[in-house]
Amino acid sequence: MFNSIVKDKNYKNLFNGDWVTSNNTIDIISPVDNSLVGTIPAMSKDEANIVIQNSKASQKNWANMAISSRAEVLHKAAALLDENVDYLSQLMQVEIAKDKHSCIAEIKRTADFIRFTADAGKHLEGETIGADNFPGFKKNKISFVTKVPVGVVLAISPFNYPINLSASKIAPALIGGNSVILKPSTQGAISALHLVAIFHEAGVPHGVINTITGRGCEIGDYLVTHNDIDFINFTGSTQVGKHIAVIAGMVPMIMELGGKDAAIVLCDADIESAGRDIVTGAFSYSGQRCTAVKRVLVINDVADSLIYELMKNIKLLKIGNPEDDCDITPLIDNKAADYVQELIDDALGHGATLLCGNKRNANLFYPTLFDNVTTDMRLAWEEPFGPLLPVIRVKNIKEAIDIANRSVYGLQTSVYTKNIDDAFNIANKLEVGTVQINNKPERGPDHFPFSGTKSSGMGTQGIRYSIEAMTRLKSTVLLINP
Ligand code: NAP
Ligand code: G3H
Image (cartoon, rainbow, N blue to C red; front, side, top):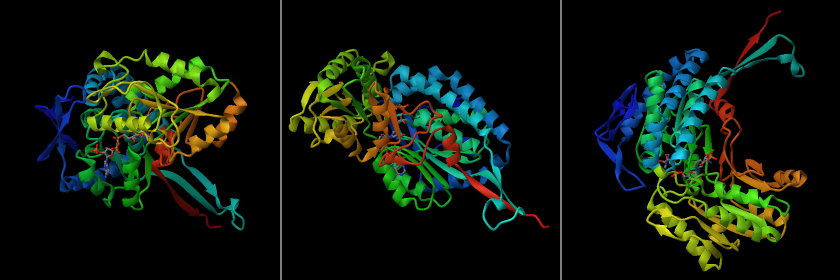
């Protein structure tokens, strides 16, 4: 199945059912050992335009196919994904340096996601509304409200979940009757192309799923401003997301962007369990998750005991290569590691207390914990996207809420406490998409709504919510003559 997508390590794009090359290519280098994983096509704008026209032309037939038939195709894709877990996991380990355990979990989770989406699609229902519900109208008018596809969906995914955050756009778009163009992150594109090969093999008709690879900075603006793109489903950095939102014009979109998720730890929390949970939340996949714990706001009275637990658990983290299933693996590139270093240096310069880490071997960064971080430090506000955790000591709950809400981001916040009243009162005041009580921030399970406020995004992901976003209501009104 994967033989057709590559020749001599040169990967191809899927266009109208065929795997095609472009004149220019981009080398994909492994963050683990700098080896060449393969090359991907750098598609030109003219080629991209042909792809978009093909996606547009192919969509209508797919939309006319029964939802139950579309669901069957998705079920087949999910089964194929399950069959290829080992192969895909090895590829991801090399391409994005994600640990083996997390790669396998991502692929299995994605198969479940696709199956759940196929079944959720079968419950896509419209409604009828009588006119007489509104004052002054009689029973002689009925609106038949149905859900129809938006058209061509441009799915843009980030490097950190190349399979899952591509499929979480593709599957809901397909079940809704749309055609999809996937523009994967350049690093991660090879894994994403394999996912698309699976949808193709499962029977998604020619042109209903196409791919465009190429650097976002070169081809991205052209894609997001193209007249025949009907929906943009983007996950990535706030910087790129805001740029797209400004230039794309009147196109509906979902934007899942960055975060600075706080873990608020109250005096009555189970400190041992909170410490364990926060370390997993902050350091899994080396902190390269939008939902990673990116700051701890702890009431001063319990700060020392929490730090003891954090240190205890950080010492248990395995550091090294993805294939050895290490928790801390090399960051996606040296630039990412340089940025982590910048935030560390700024914190040190402003008097934060380094408890462990600040050690680096090229792009492999050791888990780093700071105490006494204050709000004049960049580390209190910026998203490191690396294994770096600041502890900010606060006097009371009010100060914790204040610092949590002063962030430009609003993705998730965790509250650790045994007092359910405090938990809900704090949750009510937090300006985020999701509040987790006694649990680390996380997106799943994938049928929950997932969204961010402020600079963390707009629109809502989550299986039913994604399908609803990528379908629109269409009303046909019947006037019944007396
Ligand atoms: P990124 O640099 O913003 O890239 C995301 C995607 O946008 C990539 O496919 C990229 O392509 C593309 N892109 C770049 N410039 C573009 C343009 N002008 N027009 C259209 N597309 C363009 O993000 P990343 O480094 O992959 O991911 C890390 C960031 O994503 C973090 O900030 C993280 O918090 C956020 N994230 C958020 C969520 C969430 O659900 N909230 C989930 C995952 C990640 P190239 O790779 O070719 O540049
Ligand atoms: O990186 C951002 C992802 O949406 C986070 O997903 O919470 O399942 O790791 P996760």
